[in-house]
Figure 1 (tube, rainbow, N blue to C red):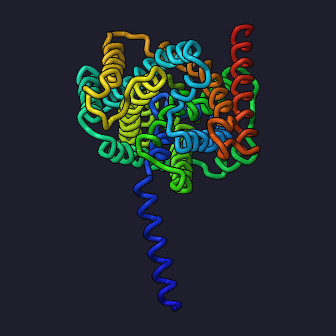
Figure 2 (cartoon, rainbow, N blue to C red):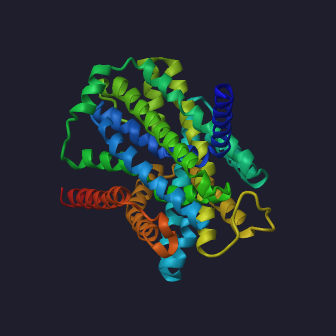
Figure 3 (cartoon, rainbow, N blue to C red):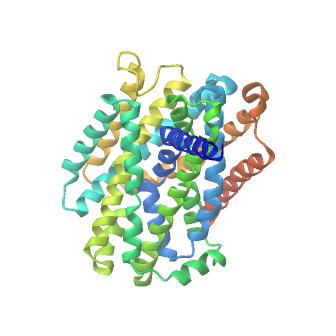
Length: 418
């Protein structure tokens, strides 16, 4: 009897592990895409300017990220609908139109930033953007248009795991771990506009508006059900941990090398170049390759997420597993975003920094709108039934909305009247 019980427990364990690995994907991928070219730039600037002093921001960012992604997954599993679909049904077509036009413009800017990361990372390795960007664009287009969801998801998971190479880059900078610990336990918080801008950037880059739509759409695309919820939650937790671990080591890499030298950077490529004389050629190459992986990963996901939620919002068919003739609007929109983003990058002397800043400002303005829409929908019994938010989820969710609005308002006020 005892032996049979052990065998049954083992079978149950192996079955659960098999189910988890079958479900693994949406949470890990969505979390990892946080560390895109814009995110890597933000973390690099944070480390270069303030050393280890901004590591503390990753703790609230981690908590908010888990809570928001869990809400997305739960809404997708319970309703079987994407966030865009739910917003249209609950807010009406006019409001939906204006929200999604803003998101579409912002995401074209975001996609342009990702191709800027591809170009920058390859230029560090001596490859011209006129070669790297078209090849990268064609590769991601083929993956989405000619592949299917299972193939694409496996590639995305490999990309997610490849981001851990930033740990190697950070360790080669020989960080002062006691200072790292002190910065977490007793951070030196400042109140100037420049510091506040980076705080908003670090927290904001972990919960970009488009992510909420991609997470929910990927749960639906994978066909996950209520009985899969505990495995989805574990997937989300692993994704959020991976996100914060990678962000932590990027900040540490730049804090331990660039900050003591007073080196100022404007983009992630600058950090890779600056690491070469300080931490060695290998650290620079590893940092550059990490930037390339992150950028091409996000250059695939971001236009994909945009095409998903715009088509959902206006009632068009969408999905990687659908053929072109079954979802022409979806594939035309995806292709159009890729082409526009690549053209902007290939324009000589294009104002990429200005595009990045304007895009982040637009993201900051749209994020509270998306989060408020989410919070209102997830608390509707008519939509969610018994799966509406509990007190903890509502507290964290509404607190995130209020804090983001207040921080953004203070930053804009300080910038205008400085």
